[in-house]
Image (spheres, rainbow, N blue to C red):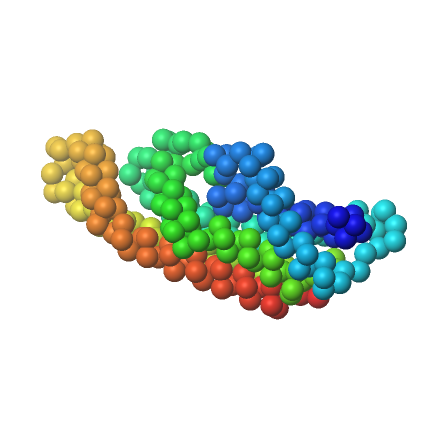
Length: 259
């Protein structure tokens, strides 16, 4: 008990980083995951890793202002780690938005319980599939392990110009990868819809008396969902690979953390 009281400041710093990660990370930040449960999980995980981190030594400031800045720095690391993984799920949603407007589903938006934003129905479907893949490969366990390992590789962050520039570099790389993943997922359906649109355009020229717009609208929906059912195994595979590469990238970020 005395050991815990003596190192209580270290315990608080660990819990701040863990809480910050859960605020923005997939699954943990979901609205279906209650805030009380999130806080309880963060507290229990902190209790487990606290003795290991405290035993390695930790330099603490001697005044309240410096300690408050240290707490802010720990929150920054947690948010940064969770946000990098959350960008992969943003790619899943973006892939649905790429072709939702083309088949008339852009106006049909639903509330995403994970991100708490309104997205097209297809984007919500892709997001739920991605979440199932995330849980299937134990991504929620990986995030907790990543926070624990971050104390080995990034014990204290220093908000210097090099650190800020390095974080922006990692974010830019993640944003570019987000569009690539979204395009890979949406490309089969987008390509099919493009061919259907070209075909309907040719039919409109060949038979002007036909109302191609009214006939093409339901035809595009049927074809799009048919292709979506056929390529779902491929989409799941792409999501699986994207999440695994995201975890590898997150590990590299921790190893090559800018200082």
